Structures are given as structure tokens and as C-alpha cells.
Amino acid sequence: MGVSLTKNPLLDQKISLRKEIVQKEVIRHKISSTAARVVFVLDHSGSMRTMYRDGTVQDVLERIFPVAMLFDDNAEMEFYWFDSVFRELDPVNYDTVDGYVQRVILSKNEHFGGTSYAPVMQEILTRYGKSHPAPIPTFIIFITDGNNSDKVAAKAVLTEASHYNLFWKFVGIGDERFEFLQRLDDLRGRFIDNANFVSISDLSCIEDQTLYSMLLEEYADWLELCRKNNIPVDAAVTSPVEAIKSAALSKITGCVFQEEDTPDMLRIHIYYPDNRKFGIVKINKVNNSMQLRKLAGGSPQNYDLTSADDLILL
Image (cartoon, rainbow, N blue to C red; front, side, top):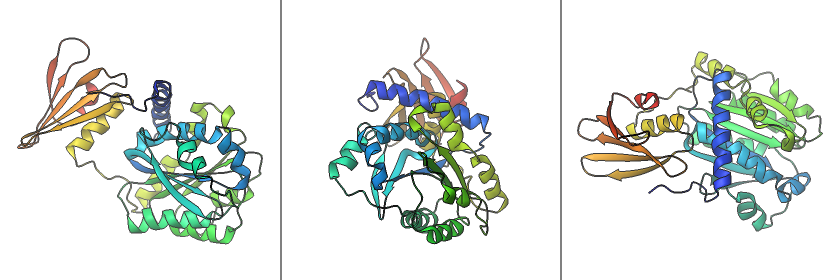
């Protein structure tokens, strides 16, 4: 049966509306491919302590998550915090986003340290660029409120990462001038331009549309640079199940799926966020044919689908 996505209807509504805004910004920025792994990297230095404790970081997490819902290949967001060292935390998804900061971070009562960019950047390069590469991009949202103590090392990592399908969106928050992040944005010696920097003095005062527009700035240009330089960013969706789910999410923001698997047939039940049932897609395992039994909008109707894209048109 359909279930509430986060067990918090107000948060569900916010995420759904924000995902629609992200979709509109994707179109406006002419981004040709939205399949990506999304990684969220957040400063955990001492100067960030108040923002963790007063709810600002939780709010930021809830506002960034809809980007992952639209882009990420498994609809979740990998999360790292960093100070003098770094930690990989539990992924952020619909099951974990509500109350994440208090439950996963603050409850551990870990020390807030200094500010070193390079260790976490190297981890992301190693993991997503070298150890577990994928033919889709990795979109990294890197948020900090201060300059770092390891500038030479950070430049070296970003330069090496320019050979891989990793896009770095550096976001400076607060009143710092962020001279180093501006230098990273224009860093010479890279294979391609693989980073963009934006500065936001107060995240709580910026509208969602403006925030998402800033986050997506230069991403389309980077995708084109990757294509011109044979860096893979356009993996085709080969699984019929993944294709159906991707198409359904494009049509119904925040929809929920339930799979029913038998030896000959796979049924994907599709629910609206409010638990109403949109329909059932039947995938014949013998010949891979697909049929939609649409239940929403009047009397049930059956449609033969030649591809998952047909679902968007119905």
C-alpha cells in the first residue's frame, strides 16, 4: 500500500514543491541530462556550531535534498561532514531526512574542529572517480563558511579531479570573502573547468528558486565540456524498472512505488504522494512488453507502452 514518504506531511509537501522548482530550473538552464550521483559535503568546523544547533543546517539539508530526488540514480544523497578530518554519514533519503541533523550528527556530540578541504575532496575523488566510477556524473555540493588551511593540497585534488566526471559546486556561506574558493573556480592547469563557486551571505533569506538556480549554474556547460573531451556523462537507462520509475518521477513529483514480482510478470504500483493510486505498470518478463493500467482520472484504462517515455505523455 502507499505510505507517507517521510511520516511528516508538511515536509513531504515542501520537498514536492521544491522538486518542481528544481525541475523548472533544469529546463531553464538547458541541462540535457539529469541522471547523476549527488554528494553533499558540509563544513563541521567550530564556526558552524551555532548553525548546526539552531536548525539552520537541518533546513539546508531539506532544501538540498530535492536536488538529489531529481538527479540521483537511487534518489538519495551521500553525506560527508568535514573539519580537520572528515566523516561519511548515513545517506539522506525519504526515510532519513526528517530530523537528520539531531539524530545522526548532534546526538554523537563530536568535536567541531578546524577547516581542511583536501581530505574529504580526496576521498570523493578516490571513491567516485577511481574506485567506483560510473558512466553518469557525480554532482558534489560543497558548503563551507570559511577558508581552509590546506590550500595547496586542495588545488592539487581539484586539478586531478578535472579528468573525471565530478562536478564541484562550492558554496560559501556567511560574510567571509572566500578568496580561495574564488581562485578554485578559476584554477589554471585543469583538464577541463570542473568547478563553480557561489557566495550566499544568509541561506535562510534566499528563496528556493534563487538557491536552485545558483546551484545549477555552469552545470550544463560542464556537461558539454565532458562530452567534448570523452568524459562519460550520458549513460543510458537500461533497466525497464529504472526507466519506468524515472519516467514516473518526471510526471508525478514525489510518487511512491511498490513492486510485485512473479516468475512471469513484474508489476510496479505507482502512488501519488497523498497515497492515491496513479496506476500499475506491468512488465512481461518473457518479451519485455509493458502495459499501464491507469486508475487515476476516471474509469480505469489500459495502455500499451513502447517505452517508459510514453508514461510521461499519459
